[in-house]
Image 1 (spheres, protein in one colour):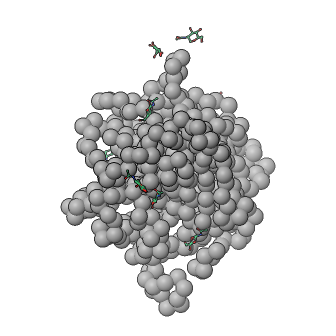
Image 2 (cartoon, protein in one colour):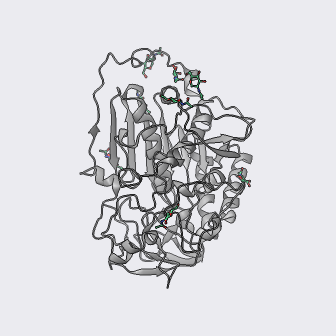
Image 3 (cartoon, helix red, strand yellow):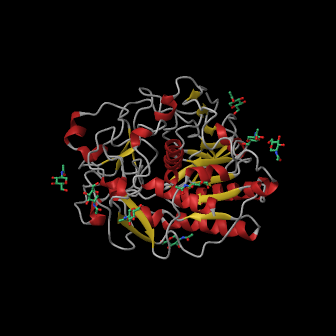
Length: 445
Ligand SMILES: *[C@@H]1O[C@H](CO)[C@@H](O)[C@H](O)[C@H]1NC(C)=O
Ligand SMILES: *[C@@H]1O[C@H](CO)[C@@H](O)[C@H](O)[C@H]1NC(C)=O
Ligand SMILES: *[C@@H]1O[C@H](CO)[C@@H](O)[C@H](O)[C@H]1NC(C)=O
Ligand SMILES: *[C@@H]1O[C@H](CO)[C@@H](O)[C@H](O)[C@H]1NC(C)=O
Ligand SMILES: *[C@@H]1O[C@H](CO)[C@@H](O)[C@H](O)[C@H]1NC(C)=O
Ligand SMILES: *[C@@H]1O[C@H](CO)[C@@H](O)[C@H](O)[C@H]1NC(C)=O
Ligand SMILES: *[C@@H]1O[C@H](CO)[C@@H](O)[C@H](O)[C@H]1NC(C)=O
Ligand SMILES: *[C@@H]1O[C@H](CO)[C@@H](O)[C@H](O)[C@H]1NC(C)=O
């Protein structure tokens, strides 16, 4: 375990108050109780220290050998020969169509391709996201297709993607929403390659999904604030007093700098008015702490991140993506319900064009856009995956109460299910599959 002095929140049910637009880290959910509608309930860490993924792996580093491949499998023999140098560079083509502007179309004709996989068909599904397993009965949410106004999204083809990723490493770096997307990608590939040998390895903050036939690796690296912070422990990260070392990223970056495709995100953990910044090390007693506005801290962190990319990324090799903010659905009054309603019991998307919830912080998105613009001037291209708007429409896509509950529910909660609904993450199969289809469109073009 990490040596950093991580101060675990031990007291069960302790509450931290936060202003309305703040929603927090992965299992912290807004308590919609009438008296204190905007108080975060912090789930104790001492009782169930394993999250869904770590829970999958009994020991710190266990290899799951999932299915043995027979060498007669159809595509393993054919494509091992073409490893010329052209294969290892990316063809970067500018798409003329804006994939991110469009509408959701319900797709249930007889030839429907949605959902792209079955929940129970994915061996690496997470209990945090397996809504059907945990009792969700309306599965219409799985059958919406994203239709850009000006073009079609290319059909996801796992074989084609793996051919692009042969001998390569694709890494998702960020928080639990990026992990949500990573699980989606793992499932998209796992369910389309039943014959292949695949392994899942977990080592600290790094989860690594390997497809042996292709010597390809699809990883997730936990660093919710991108830079170093006291929330870096992949399991014990619910700390009351959030602190970042806004100028230090190397501890994390050394684990992903060599990847061929990098997909970053980081928003949710910054959504509080202020946080502490540390100059110095977590291990020293003489570090300097200063409380600053989170937005300012975010700017500092992304500056550190962009400087790292400028000086350490191999520009001819690595493709860079940044996911825009994933919206939440905590306030029903935004779509015409009562203000004490949230995503709980929602079964249809929002159809109002351009709908925007007030939780999506445009100041933060401006910071991202500015940093990425600055990187472009310095010759480093980062593609923004602008999934905020398309996901805004999907109030029906969250796990709500249909996911593993890490703590037993109280009677009060059971009476009022929306009080413990998860309106942050996304059920799988579901919305993040579309994010990955878009990512695929860029990678495979
Ligand atoms: C392909 O790569 C392998 C090792 O990565 C190498 O041994 C082999 O010679 C290469 N084949 C060609 C045709 O370049
Ligand atoms: C779909 O298929 C079923 C039988 O498999 C058929 O009865 C039905 O008419 C088809 N519907 C459409 C819209 O093609
Ligand atoms: C379904 O697929 C068949 C052939 O695969 C095609 O002829 C037909 O037009 C498709 N129907 C729809 C509604 O897409
Ligand atoms: C997927 O891609 C592979 C390799 O490019 C191709 O052989 C296969 O036909 C594609 N599958 C579909 C359904 O398009
Ligand atoms: C497998 O991929 C890794 C990069 O992910 C590369 O370093 C290694 O050389 C590859 N091995 C083979 C046998 O191609
Ligand atoms: C786990 O990661 C550490 C460094 O982060 C590395 O030293 C160690 O070799 C890794 N363990 C395995 C089994 O790969
Ligand atoms: C859920 O929504 C349905 C209509 O969509 C409604 O009839 C039902 O009362 C709602 N249930 C709760 C608990 O709000
Ligand atoms: C993302 O999309 C929104 C609206 O859909 C737009 O306002 C914003 O400028 C876009 N951002 C980027 C970086 O393209």
